[in-house]
Length: 498
Image (cartoon, rainbow, N blue to C red; front, side, top):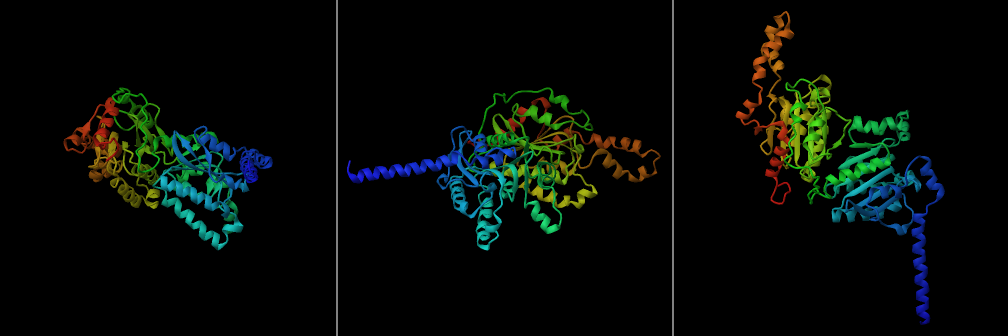
């Protein structure tokens, strides 16, 4: 070998050694930094990514730059390629710096071009005060914020909050968001709030899992620990497509499409006045074990989630009679609208189960602006361009009936034999028509029940079927088969929604 060749070989060896040294620095982190994570009872960024991705599928992005507050990677979940951004609390507490911006932008552009799903594991966040407070850095950051929304409808976005996170914009922009029980997500830190108001709020009261899952409705599921939280993300992804160009994956469960269930005949009351859990109805209709409920603790008078019917993903919305009698409140509208946007974005067929006495019109609801919210959410429903099937399983009263997507030309509506469909409830109608007689009665409660009988007789499903208000009255035992047939009739030639 020539002298030049020997020099080249020696030089290559030095360069490869430097590469291996940098890789080792990523694998074997500063023990004190790792201890800081362990002392908080948290997993490292690498451990979180290992739980998220398929085993052996990860390759680090921009790893030559060395340890970074944000762990960037590409890998697969359920065999599908994805992009991952995980905050590394062991490096500068997971806080953004201007140095990591180019790598993050490059990875985001890669995801945009390939319409790849983006998974974000948050802890820390926000920016360092000494850099982001400068006008030049702040102006540059604005492009990152805008990009979150610009890329939202190419690849799907999934977010898991696994610690205290500040300014986690992607939570609000996500197609599915989850957080662990002991995490928090707030616009700013309590210290900034204290500076502005003189009072430092409790971070968990302000933006903990309880607040977001029951009050704000910004978190779809809460995990009891980090592992369960990350599993929620993997499960949600199994129902959704990688982007809005592809159909959702079809996963056959072995549950026959023509399975009958005679238990459905007795799950709801023969006369729709008693509460029951509508989730039992949903779980007996969809593919066994496939119902994934979203926002279970927010606006509990409405149930939403994803499920499978004959292996196909469907969006499920239902009134919950055991909470507020299944009335449609403003928060329930916001919750249902969340489902509608997801269905519209990814072409998911919509299946609804209606049992509601109507829209909740109390003074607090009026003060929340329920009238405007009703019109807004109804507009979202009317613009929905996916197959739709509605099943009225109890009461379908007033605007609540239409709000759940029934009697809209683009879809199909079935009802069970015990259904009551009307503009007003029987006793409500009688109290309006006979209000003078009731004012003069000695026992108005007994009288209104008597006067309501003819109104109730006019609410039966047979009259609705004769007037083509519904497409058919069906045996509850056949609900699964009828929904699957109705959805098949509305699919395009490729099996995807038209």
